[in-house]
Amino acid sequence: MFRFLAARILGAIPLLLLLSVVTFAIIQAPPGDYGDYIKSMLINQGGATIEQAEAQAEAYREANGLNDPLVVQYFRWITGIVTRFDFGHSLYYNKPVGDVVAERLPATIMLALTCHILASIFGITLGVVAATRQYSWVDTLLGFFSFLGMTIPRFLLAIIILYLLVFRLNVSEVGMFFSARYGGAPWSWDKFVNLVQHIWPVVFIATFGGLAYNMRVMRANLLDVLNAQYIETARAKGLPEGTVIMRHAVPNALHPLVAYQGVVMPYMLTGEIEVAIVFGLATVGPAIVGSMGVGDVFVTATFMLVLATTLIIGNIIADILLALLDPRIRLGGEKND
Image 1 (cartoon, helix red, strand yellow):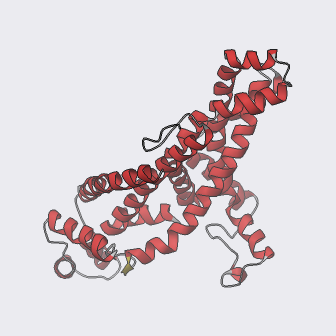
Image 2 (cartoon, helix red, strand yellow):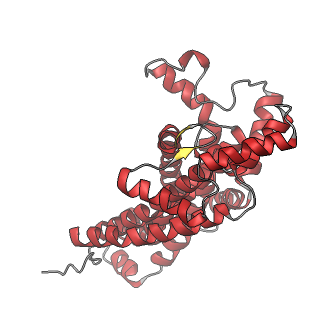
Image 3 (cartoon, one colour):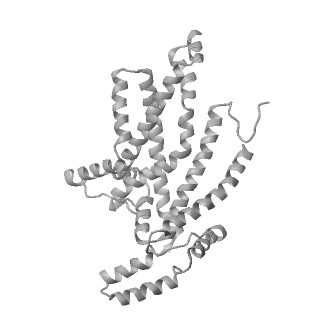
């Protein structure tokens, strides 16, 4: 197991470097930079002339190295990460990029993990229920809801819920995690309830899509496993149907879903990002969109690198879970005694 983990971690380093190069190049590809954002702000809000704004923007580019070649900017950024764990300075937020990430990433990961856990528990459970009641009204009803969850765009569902909350239910505290009175208060049960009252739309929408996928995959896998010969053998031995399903069929039907966990974290993060953008929560989503809009390249590149890292970590965790679930799988060249 240790050899497997070491090999995967060492193999991830060149992959992350390659992804950082591609990401940095793509982000820099569109015309314009943060200097252009400063120029437009000086003209539109500062009343400066075009010449004055262009002079100040050019001075800002020169002072912050934006006029340097793309290769020089990239190596300055990646060298800071490798040698000092310094992700650069955010031009828009006017603080280290690490501080921007530290402010927004924990809340994003907690939301994504919450949605993933709920989607896995309910999705797998409902998938088992649907498979064991194939073609019944329960199976039909669950299939209808899973179809909705997999086809309705998350941002559209978020807009609908936002419209109902603001314009129909007159909810004013939208786009925040807590009410004002709980902002700096220590954790308590009341503060937790207040948090749930504010983030339930994000959790519901992100969970709904993941639940639908898990349910459909679990149903299809379990139906295939239930027709396998070893399941018929277990039934012929006189084992109770519940034991046959839960101890023999369900663990084998879980394999594709466990392998899916390798990509589910970035998927849940991006799903949360879509909804968070609509609701304006202070998470990764609005930070990525905002930084891309103004040319704050180091913030965008760092968050993209974080998403790539979660994908690699997720795949390693999925491999370990598969080995634990199925003893026939061996990692890192391990052999049976």
